Length: 216
Image 1 (tube, rainbow, N blue to C red):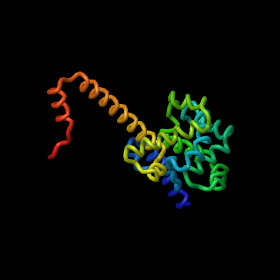
Image 2: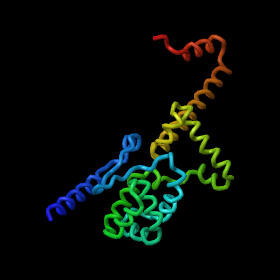
Image 3: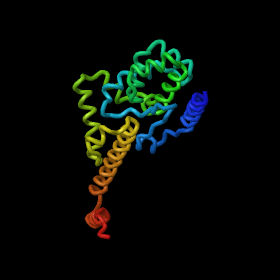
Image 4: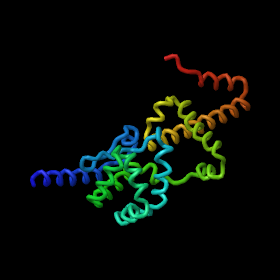
């Protein structure tokens, strides 16, 4: 009896800690997770994106808000997808998750809520115009776009193996940063080209001197 009481208190404390978790940049980059009871809920990673993303997309499209009532409806309509995605996020066997669902629907709902919160980078992400255009492109063109994204990160100093181990949230954040840096570099180069084109010899020489790296 005392053991059950302690287990219940442990579950309550883990739920409170879950609510206090901040999904900031450090949470994403450090691949942090949250725990409910004895179950660890992790962020989705890029190495198996093709396995979890289609299932997660089904759940994302169904969810209108993050309430328990929506989660109950989600379990009724997409139970198989929920179990599959939870298996990816918790590294729990699907059979074990089914047993949890049969024993306690409320615990399963808490796990679903935690999974969505931990992976907010995916579930709250708005579809960009770039992704919308992908739908009208061929499969090969879509694959090329992913390799373009990987290549942009590699050019920014990331390694292919490291990219595959990134959480989805970290990947998207790094990609946005790399795109921002590339745009800034293009803008800077455009300004320099224009300045060089219209500068007189003395002014151009001064400009090139200022751009040279410092010897300090």
